[in-house]
Length: 193
Image 1 (tube, rainbow, N blue to C red):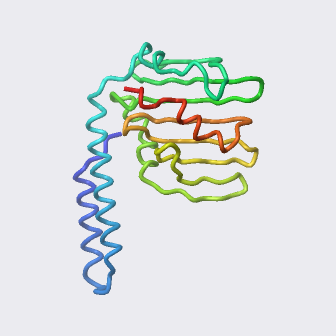
Image 2 (image 1 turned 60 degrees about the horizontal axis):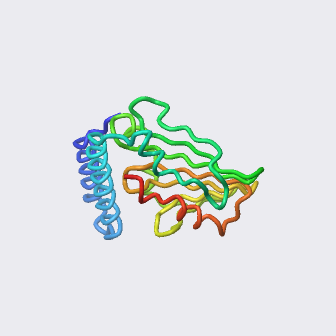
């Protein structure tokens, strides 16, 4: 799905015009929010334009990145680049019921670019939600902005758009909150290039 930049410019222009006439006491924070929105849309469009021309990681490149262990648990299964033209990797580390699942989608190329859209958008948002299912908040782990969900069954889900290219999901079972930083550190995401 392509998003037309001129469509957003027209929409933002209409918003700015409609905010100007009737109420002369509009505050600067609203104008600032509109400017931030315009910048966010522009950045997302530039990111899409850049990624569509990139080449997705190969099986060999994903395999070279994969850590052999995570939190002392061995790599027990992996699936790399199942869909042609889409760089992706799904792995599981476990000992008995204790496990960590990691999924990475490379945003390079047409298919990858479309596959990471929700992560790209999510990375621009701030979360602070609670419900009977658990909670979701925006946090920072090892210097990375992460959408962290804690489910009532004690399971953690981490989601991020790493390096403006990679959609990363981490799902844990029988892993403590204090170990989440270590997971991010041991994943060595900086080696995904």
